[in-house]
Amino acid sequence: MAGKPMVLVNGISMQSQLTGVGYYTLELFSELAKMRLNTEKDKSSSDELSGTSSESSIFLFDGKANITHWSGTQFEQIDNNFSRISNTAMGKVTDLRFLIRGWLKKNFGSNLWLRKYARHYHSLQFRRAVRSLGQAFVYHEPNFIAFPHDGPSVVTVHDLSFLRRPQIHPSDRVRFMNENIEGSLSQASRVVVVSEFVRREVESLFGNEIAEKTTVIRNGVSARFKPTVCVDSVSKTLKKYGLKHRGYLLSVGALEPRKNLLSLVEAYVQLPMNLKSRYPLILVGPKGWHLQALEKRLHALRHEPIQWLGYLSSEALRSVYASARAFAYLSTYEGFGLPVLESMACGTPVLVSQAGALEELVGKSGMTVHAYDIKSITEKLEARLLDDTLWNLHRTHGLKISEALSWNRAAHKMEAIYAELI
Image (cartoon, rainbow, N blue to C red):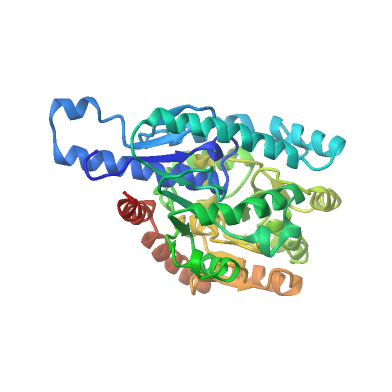
């Protein structure tokens, strides 16, 4: 592809339930691939080009020495596949990987050795994959820790919570990241971060040498997340889960300590009963780690109007975003806050914690609160649900912010970085 350097992307994060890094990889590189294909189609309409238009110069490493062209059209296939195998009911876990990891940790303690083994295996496969390319390329690692590579490379850093707040991560993950992050950033030709907050964190923790090659490229929001979603799709999703349009409080994110769901739950149950009956709390997201305290509390509050829907496909997710009365996200540390942006893009006003990049993202388009101030959270939740004037104002401002942040914009900025490296 003339003028566009070949890019090899580590796509391993898309081989399990799609959460933060997985969605980032899928969205950004789908947009890059489509953008490149559209550029080539504009340059020529010859039959020869048309015959190769299903391929782009974005290549995907799948962890098994395989490299495939990434056309930018695979999103729904991947996303729907994981939603089918991952949907669960409360108290039931069908994710085989989660069960295996839980058994290993229970019987053998930390699974750091398993991470190291997987890393060694994938590194060997990566070297084989690189040899099969046979031409110059930029290697992009979207998930913090790059494989050893002598050529030009880009590493994306989404946050540094494993350094700043190690207690909110599994100990084996913290140790693995600590052992590898500095080498990954030092090897990288360019480091991409997703917010000004993360850029400041990189500078503070790794110094000027790393900071000088760091660029901020903010995440985008998919065009699928819009307030005008298909009415039939919304109605079907709401009916499936017994929800009413604009009749619930929503929170989206993996069930893990960093998302601070215990504070949200504790604040929510302090609301007046008539308000809770009108607006049940709906939790969406896959099971993470260290769930005992949350599960125990939810069981004790089983008579409260709180419901966990598990992991949802993008179609179902956009429906619950667009129909919520309000969105609450009280994370204790956040490098960007993609669910917050998705909620604003769907026209649902937000309440977020004053943590990390969340205030940077929301600005004056939402309400903020201290992550652990239960009384204040309860007051803000009540205002978020009942104040129609503020609701309409924040909805309008949130839509403007989301319109300015697209994956196409992010892809163009990323292309400029690739062009500098080859």
